[in-house]
Length: 210
Image (tube, rainbow, N blue to C red; front, side):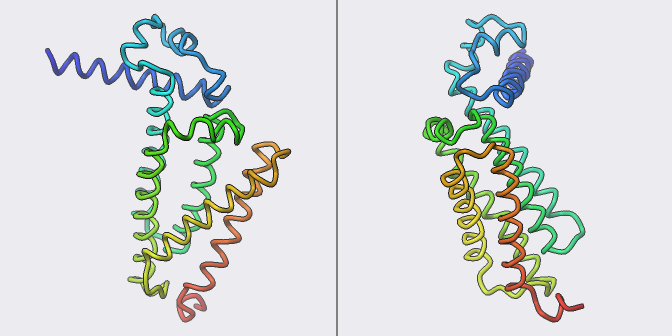
């Protein structure tokens, strides 16, 4: 009986998170209310508070959900039979898409994102560590296959993440008048330019020249 109750509770929690995710993608965190989320799933607001005491708690779960989906998709990507260089390119493209999703959830505004970031800062610390591990796996695979020539995959992975993060922050700071779509198109272009430049330096010349 306890197991059944727990399962029902987990299903309800996931239902709330998905409903909140859908609304926040459309309107942004600040414009979504607990009343609207409860109404979307046919639940009384008082019952909603039983599962999530605050809207920030729901937002944390929404971000966790997005992070888990991204990490899962990249883990599957790494298992696919393709060159490590192509996996790195796809990782960068999917990362841009993921960043756009998070930006929309926060309210499509850098200032709004800054205001909610403290609520979920610890999630991003863990997310960064997971990303680093995944990029290290791609680089190590490239080393094993002879496609890459890298002395320290961990150091290169850290550099990659720092530069990708820096490019994103610079674009938001310098192009405040751009729409989110324009910003992420430019971000994708710059991220791909960066990864192509990186690959030209780490690819084994003999393999790359075949």
